[in-house]
Image: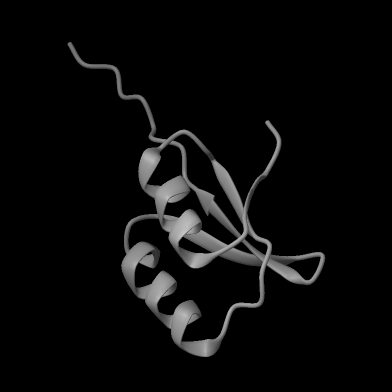
Length: 69
């Protein structure tokens, strides 16, 4: 699956919250405050933040399916 690109912070929040994208590239300059907010809001929820081609990429961990029964 291709990495979705967010061109501003609002778009990034929408993409992450929608659950439609496993990876969202922050294709804009992220200042320290925005990075801290993203890492605080999503870091505890299983989102990994990495650096890729001069932009940050947010990767949502796949929910592990559990066999019940």
